[in-house]
Image (cartoon, rainbow, N blue to C red; front, side):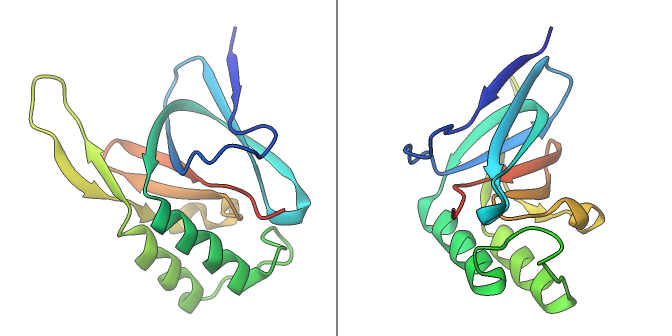
Length: 141
């Protein structure tokens, strides 16, 4: 049986950036994403709260600047400039690689361009030190 967690279901919490690392955990996390499309994507894994409100705001504003409140296909047109800009922001998001009994290593996220088709507002595929993940943030609707 899979457990289900909807992140900020009524949009009233200020939880900051959250990273869900893909893994067979038996827990699925969902987030409202895609701007006014109100898409509810979900992924199985484990949640890493990142906070980093300034970067959350920057990512949020970047999506609005690029796509308005229509951060979902087919309204999104990706080109090298947009991909590069978003990746530059994501590479400033701190994500610690933690190993039990070992040293913690400060790292950063990277836009997963191989999964760019899955990238919509508030649901961003990323590469992390621990594997593939999804970076979530509040939705602009």
